[in-house]
Image 1: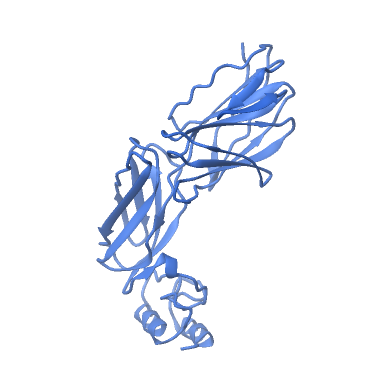
Image 2 (image 1 turned 120 degrees about the vertical axis):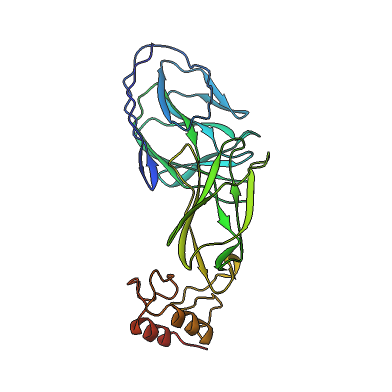
Length: 295
């Protein structure tokens, strides 16, 4: 019989999960069953542990450790870090399921993230875990939120934007826009764990925060910033961090001046024109743009 306590998840940007285990007497490790619930569970077994294997590799006779299991994306790579240093990685199967065991005997902060087959990374999941000698701690039911990227950083109003990423198949998901308006879209995930949707952006001008999530989960992807405005700019071309450089060509010139002038005294300006980050466009922003002027 197993006795353990289960602490709830605390979501603050990432997931912090702390497990304190009260352990009884059994002398074996139960078989692992992974389910797509999205609810993380904790269990433990104690005693002389047998040789533990997962993903085709042998870990030998482990006296204590942790097993992380759940779902990422089909053929995704799941990376495990201990105190910000990588200690293990495993490739998920065609359904996105993964399981990885890490030997350990003392308190540690573990961080997990998934990388889809196109190299896009998930948000981080953090697990501070307390270990006891001879115990295998199971952290199961993990499910990473979808990955996300867009083809454009800035899109002309009513022009087309493409959002794509990695996700689990057969689980409803949505893409959320939050800014001057709020809007959601429902992409279709292919059998290889990829989604891509292209659509005209029918939103008022301004800066939007865009994220993806499964409809049955509060955890979301990384947040993208997309500007709906008067010009298109591919995300791959956005290399400049100069204040006022709104078309990201690494120059501050008349093009940027005209964009700033458009937003003068208007509400909800994009960050690139709000050079002093006070959420309004006034003469101060023009003076900062003039300082960086190289047109």
